Amino acid sequence: MTEKTTIGHWLDNSIHIGGSGRFGDVTNPATGEVTAQVAFADEADAARVIAAAKAAAPGWAAASLTTRTKVLFRFRELLNERKEELAAIITSEHGKVLSDALGEVSRGLEVVEFACGMPHLLKGSHSEGVSTGVDLHSKRQPLGVVGIISPFNFPAMVPMWFYPIAIGAGNTVVVKPSEKDPSAVLWTAELWKEAGLPDGVFNVLQGDKVAVDALLDSPDVKSISFVGSTPIARYVFERASQAGKRVQALGGAKNHMLVLPDADLDLAADAAVNAGYGSAGERCMAISVVVAVGPIADDLVDRIASRTKTLRIGDGTRGTDMGPLVTLAHRDRVASFVEAGDAAGAKLVIDGRESPVDGEDNGFWLGPTLFDHVTPDMSIYTEEIFGPVLSVVRAETYDEAVELINANPYGNGVAIFTNNGGAARKFEVDVEVGMIGVNVPIPVPMAYYSFGGWKNSLFGDTHAHGVEGIHFFTRGKVITSRWADPAVSPTGGLELAFPTHD
Ligand code: NAD
Image 1 (cartoon, rainbow, N blue to C red):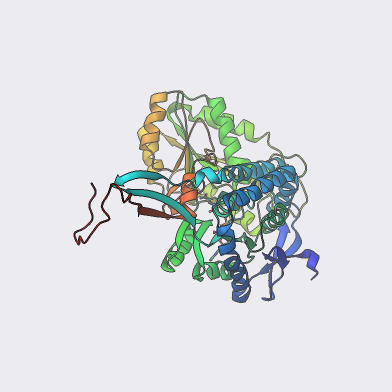
Image 2 (cartoon, rainbow, N blue to C red):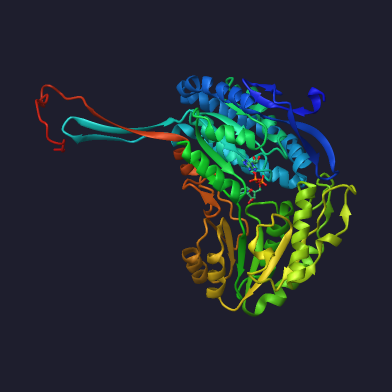
């Protein structure tokens, strides 16, 4: 094993392979080829990385806002200049097509830009004369070392939901990327160094459950920001909370798209295809269920099917529309749902197992699959498939459709397609989901709003980025001070009653 093909940890602004002797394969999903080995941390590796972050924390917290934001601005410039490089890394390990990878980087960049406004975002408030000669002001301070644990499906963007804000607010970070596509975060570590970030502020710990558990348990890690599947999100939330940490754990999803009879069906069909099959359905905001209300169902399914048939599946570097799934095991799991849906009696309108592919034979291919007449008891409805499988459920009325959506255990994203403003407004009020699109299929909020779902899609109560992100990565203080003017006010005297104000 050479240094060149080994993806290591990052501490004190340099790469370390660590001492665990454990490694995992990293593959190119479009070829099936093992392209690198990623180091899997043991407890000693984790302790070293956390110690580097801890050592850097006081100095970085004390760095002026100007110093911190200058580094953020420089990082933003470098990332913008070199985003194609990062997109190519994402495609080579995740498989998503290059244009989609570039979109991912651009959405991450927006959070960096938001964090560049940190001097404004961290401003406290001040009240003069709350009592005679007494003023009150508030401030927010960093937590110290913060942990970020990310999933495979957005290897660059999801960590960027958190670390620009955490760093801008004066924390030091340890990122644990997905072991399936670990290079993107390591690449950004080099960029931070180039941007002038001091040693120990941005650190990367590679690995599996051992690395995650080390972050959850370490008393030196003050908060955990997790994004991944629901069972692991719940586990992370419980274990890190038990260790006394602040936790935000974003989980899985099953996102519905409600189409009312008055909707523009071409707009709705385009949206269903883009949001259902983009990134091969491996998005937490992917649409996986279309709920067709009333008499439009046949027409809508025809329009979705005819568009789906035009998609080009293949290697993401060849200008295709949809790439492979992330691993062979995941490809096979998703294909097993296609079998299960067929066996359960759903109508298989398009079978992605038969799609032509512009790519190597050993790639992890599965084309876009469309099911109609899906019912809520089928596994293709109840499970998060996380692949290019779109189900159409038919409902008689708006009320029946909303009842279905609200009964689902997930509540990440949802969309309604309608030309009726009153119906859209009612939907906003009725639906129990965190992010809602009106004639918009993937309603991912901008960086200055917060991203997060309800129910099994979020454990903890703080969403990612926006004002909630600033709050998550800082602790508040309120200071009451008396600087009495001896010429006009008394200096006090003894008074043991509870203080009141006048
Ligand atoms: P995952 O839960 O398998 O892995 C996420 C992270 O947890 C990885 O870093 C992984 O190494 C670690 N991990 C895995 N098993 C673990 C265990 N037993 N103990 C401790 N750590 C463990 O998720 P994934 O397959 O990488 O990503 C896909 C999932 O993420 C989907 O469910 C998707 O909906 C979800 N997701 C949610 C959002 C959101 O914003 N809600 C965003 C992106 C992805």
